[in-house]
Every structure is written in C-alpha cells, then in structure tokens.
Length: 348
Image (cartoon, rainbow, N blue to C red; front, side):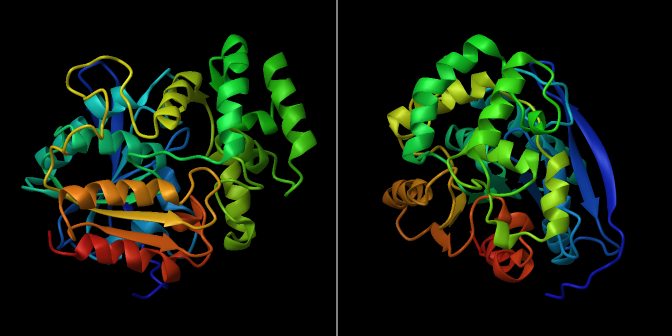
C-alpha cells in the first residue's frame, strides 16, 4: 500500500451513553472514497485516547485502514483522557463501554458483523467483553500487547506489590503530565524519583510514562523506532490513570490471568476457567522489546485459545518493536500495519 496518501480525513464524533451513565464517543474516520470492507473498531489503552491512532505522521494507523477500504471507528472509552478523570476498572469497561460502542456502530452502519483492533487495556477489557459473550457481532479481533494473561517484568511486579499500597494512600491517580507540572506534594515526589532514575531522554512525559507503565528505559516504545516529531507529540497524549486500575491489574498479574473484581454476574470471575463464549477469530501481536507486558503474555493467551479451537487463531511476535511503536513507529506502515491488516482480511 502507498505511504504517500495526503487526502484529508473526515472525522465525525459520534457520542454514546453507557448504561451506568457515562457519555463516551467514537471518532468515525472516513476518506474521500466510500468504504467497501465494513466497520472496524479500534480501541486505545489506559490513560491515553483515540487520537493515538491519528498520530501526526505521513501514514498513521487510522489512515492506513481507511485507505485499505475500511469504515473506521476509534473508540474513546472511559479510560480516555478526553473525558474527566474517573476511577474506572476493566470490569466497568467490559460490561458497559465496549458493548455500547459496538452496538452504536451496528446501529449507525447496519452491519451484521464488525472487526476490531484492540490495544493494551483496551485489549484486556475488550477481551473480557468478548470471552463473556457481550460483543457477539465482533467476529475478528486483532489484539496488541496483552489480553487474557498479563505477564510483567519482575521490577513492575515489585512496584505493584510494594509501591502501589503507598501510592494508594497518597493519590487516586498517577499522571505522566507530572513530568511537566507537578501540582501536589505527591506529584513532586514522583517527579523527583523519576528524574533521579530515568536518564534515557530529555522528554519529561516520556520518562513518566515509563515509570507509570513498566520497567524499561523506555517501557512503551523504543526510541530508535520514533522520529523526533512523534517523541515530542507524546507529551500531549498521556494523562490520568486511576489507582483502581492498577489494583485490579496487580490481582490479575498475581493470578496469571484476568480476573473480575466487581462481582457482576455478566462477567466470569476467572476468565480462563471455561471456554470462551465467542466464535470470533483472534490474532495476537506482541513486540519482542515490550517492557510493559512481556511477549509471553500473548503467547499464553494464544495457547489458551488454540487449545479450545485448534489452528483457528494466530500469533505474531514483532522483532525490534515494543508496545505502542507498533502503531506510531516511524517504520510501522512498512513493518507492522501490513501484518495487522492481513489478519483483519483473513476469512473467519
């Protein structure tokens, strides 16, 4: 596919309201030509927003899908920094956000089925929806970085075990923007700690992101995969993420798989204790350099799905890539987008 597309994208905001009262939205992204391949929903991770897939690069992921003929919908779920901070967890997103987003797309398009590309905590929570049978119209799901089996580096596990209880007493949120402006004593303490321990670059938000989400230097991308424009743009794409999320993730990491925490009967307590309630085909992606979730995370989930339906799903390990550079790395349109697209195009 050509990487020189310059036609402007038409982006329409489509709001929807969840059953528990959150007003969220979808960014409906269209090009000059009418889509011919049906709807695909793209779901961001924690403490970011749908804008991640509209990165200021010659060929970003949303444009790539549009140019490939898809009707593209970027979901801003309750973890999006476009909304006021809230103490979300994966259960709430799985029960309320993703099913409502899918239903909105179906209502808007009349499509009988749709496809999905899901990333990080958008992936874990969407996988919860899928495995619980809450998004039956989604028939192809492409997952990046982590899904049912979160496995983190040893130092991340130590942070969850020892630092998280202390942080819970001091703050309801962590915020990578503290690298630029630290409004409280806790924020100032975290910023000082990060500045003392992270010397991999001069981007204050980049360093805070690595402290917040992993164990690497950096954790969510490789610097050599980013051009300077994107490295600077990152400063505006991360903000609050609640301690409630980290508490649930700590439990999931300890158990070795996703667990629900709210006790809602629409979700199983243990997501791998029974067969998935979905006929969707899954494609799992993971970068070899990911220091947020280790490559074995996606391997274990692939193995679990493969045990239930042999030779139906797929796994891709991306050499030299990390976590988010899969989507906005300077060579992603050459290296990773074609692989993601090929999995969307495969017959179910």
